[in-house]
Image (cartoon, rainbow, N blue to C red; front, side, top):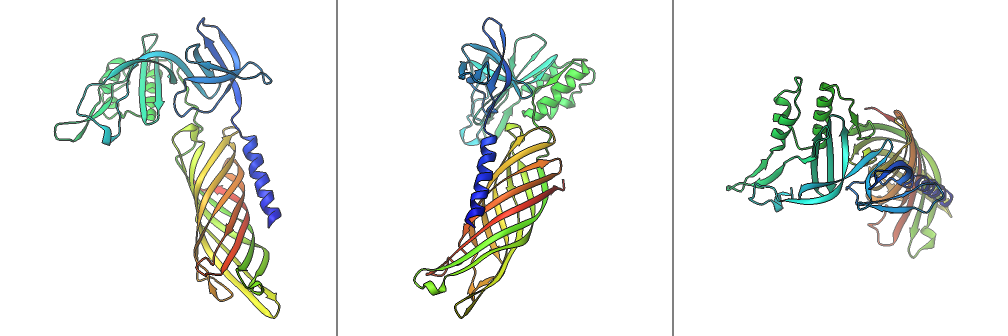
Amino acid sequence: MKKYYLLALVICSSMISFSQITFEKGYIIDDENNKKECLIKNIEWLNNPTEIEYKFSENEVPKTGSIEDIKEFGVYNASKYIRQTVEMDRSSDQIKDLTMVRTLNMVEETVFLHQLIEGKGNLFAYYDGNLSRYFYSIDDDAIQPLIYKRYLNTSNVVVTNARYKQQLLNALQCPDMKKRDFEKLKYAKKELQDLFLKFNRCNGSSDNELDYTPENNFFHLNLRPGLNISTLQVNHETLQSRNVDFGSQMTGRIGLEAEFFMPFNKNKWSVIIEPTYQYFKSEKEVGSVNNQVDYKSIELPIGVRHHFYLNDETAIFINASFLFDLNFDSTINMLKVSNGQNFVMGAGARYKKYAVEVRYGFDRNMLWKYQYYSTEYSTLSFIVSYNLF
């Protein structure tokens, strides 16, 4: 199985190397309002950056640009950030840290704001760890913070200062905008984006949505049949005569994968859970002894997957999981197999609803309850996938 291990390692390593963070086409605007085309290291900032790496040609040594010398920058078809001095409230939104103060503690800060919507109405976001703050402007007016704060009342009940609703009701004037559009409006990216898009379209503005998250549902369910090439070796700590190499065997496998996409980094990260049926049944003569294994189980890998989108329909991905194995009255030479665990890693490609993956499962010990016995059970899997929804 060593050659299969090396094959899986080479495939996964090459996929990781191919998909490292790259410099992408973009621009910077300096303090003299000079716009310069360049290549920007796009790390898909989860938190708003304070500096970036960029270069003017592929072979050039990257430069570091800071908030002090860059007025605006953008990665084409990815993101846009503008430097702005704004009033910022950094009060915690975590329940354990809430105070009984309703008013915001505004402090002037110069930051890069992430522009989400551009048009007559402009929407901006600032993220820093658990902190999420939103800002807006109409036409060329000054950028204003949307007022939001959770706090405790005198009864220690969590209440909200939601003045942002009244701010937007006053600012987003259009016949198509109704009071109910604001009454239940959440202080959340998607709802605020939808509201500003509606306002811009209502006013005939040529709006531009600058959030380039690929079109993915939050949840995918994938049917995943395939083939396993599995190898089993049984080892005894003191009696070499009880060591058995059952060799490699090709068997079928069938799984159903639930994939939950994370709401950041343009849907590139997801959590995967895939209950899978697999089996291994074999006999091996060692000396005069007939050794038998009858092993069948439901594998439950739980892990994370990272996608690298090539376009709207095509992506490559890598994933890593920790696998829990639940066997069905399985035996190896009359020894009862125990439920085990091991680590698995894989790499693959997706096109529309279809995907293929190569996955390697590292050694699993299924006889760990026996003092002198151990097993080395590893699997190289070739999987095809169809997205049910």
